[in-house]
Amino acid sequence: MQWLVLGLIVFLGVHSVRIVADDWRTQVIERVGPLAWKAGYGLLALLGLALVVWGYAQARLEPAVLWSPPLAMRHAAALLTLPAFVLAVAAYVPGNALKVRLGHPLVLSVKLWATAHLLANGNLADVLLFGGFLAWAVFNYRAARRRDARTPGTDAADEDDADDGVTEPDPRHPVSAAATVATVVVGVALWVVFAFWLHAVLFGVAPLGR
Image 1 (cartoon, rainbow, N blue to C red):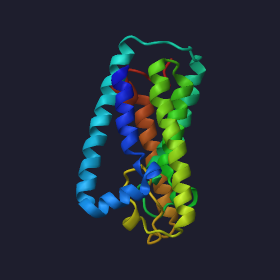
Image 2: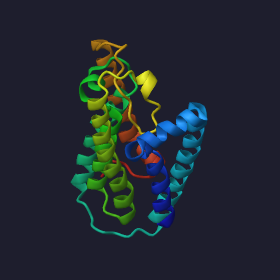
Image 3: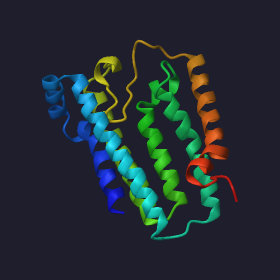
Image 4: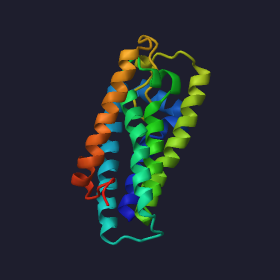
């Protein structure tokens, strides 16, 4: 369990620098350059992710059960991840209405994903993993909205380097119905593949299975 906790501290900590120390982050980028910053951030993020995966896998070998959610909750959670997939895709498709109107769809996607998994899982490792991501997403979204209020109309190409999971609306790409439809279609398609096949292959759990 300690490896999972350490991994969460490293991974979420790296992704929280902009939330808790934005001025310091800016100063470091100005001093070492954006490429060096991204390289260091990327290495730490990969290390944290590896520790999370390893720690969670080890914790599942001897699960500490806190409660046992009913089977119906697994189905409800699987459905809740559907909009999470759509929002995740929306973060990377220029000009879709979801990104423009909701703001920071990737962080909202993490919120839904984490909430869904908390509903369907009652082990201590699950609470630590998904609860940690949910708390991070809540604070990250609030911080991102405060930045929006301070600097409206910021060009995402200049301001965002994705080290906090935030993808900001880009004013160079007006809202497009085609982009919005494509976002929804791709998101739903990915959810179908993951819910009915890939999740079971990767994690040994069929979200919509009996």
